[in-house]
Image (cartoon, rainbow, N blue to C red; front, side, top):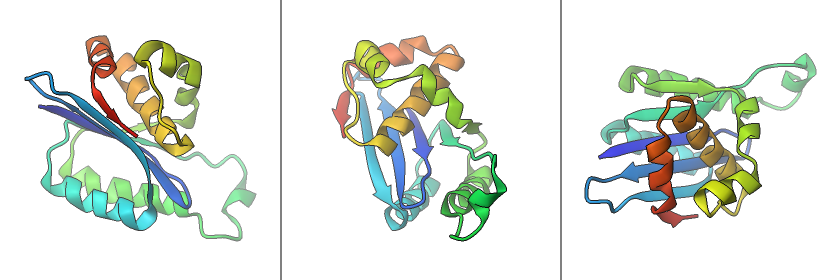
Length: 151
């Protein structure tokens, strides 16, 4: 089984896209938004499950004012992702937010025939699709068309 998880970390919600491709063809994709507590439970779950790749959206500071005031939860969450998963999953992939522009809603609908309902879940799916395209796994993108989609 080939399984991947893509994450779009946010301050209050985290977009998650879980993809499982099975040899029997019973493929599934689950895209959803999770609260921070729900996401921490997912992180714990992935320590016992095997994912071939974990993809997450990185963070670049363009304005230092963005880090003043409120706690930078997105930055903290990315730190937790890197700390926890770097030791357990050798295929931890950081992608920039800009890669999502290659997969606008219209492209998700054209290529896959569906898109998640909420923004963070769509962004996680965009990261998954970008990773698959960038690494030449176009056949896997084709398999997503026939996957059982949840989200």
